[in-house]
Length: 143
Image (cartoon, rainbow, N blue to C red; front, side, top):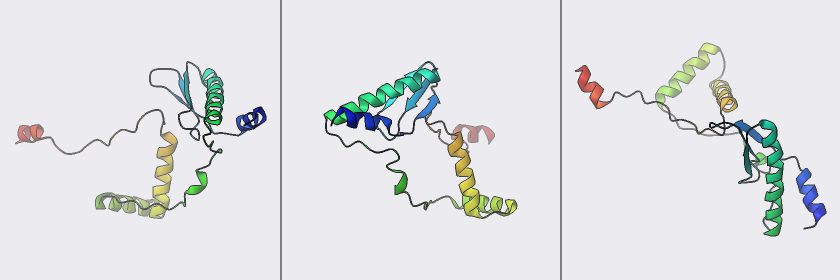
């Protein structure tokens, strides 16, 4: 591939995700280029360094004859339909809440999922839901 091809690939509008690191500083990634990630003390530095990382990623892919994904290559592969299995109690609670709000169950679920995704920090793993079961030790203490 020529230098002109490299320059063209560098100009493609790849989406950059920037988020704070738990240990300080910021992490920048380009999700369409697996493994293209960097970290810096400031947002500005992370955004500068991600461009360097993108250049190295693309250059290496060209040298190794690896297919380089286009920006948003996976965006069109989702139908917008998703089947989810959930406990009956959660289904009931969601249905009741939707009725109280005067919206469809689908609308309520999409709204709540959207809120969660917008609040989710991709640099931090999602935590497990806290169990509401009573431990055997507590159960014995109550008896």
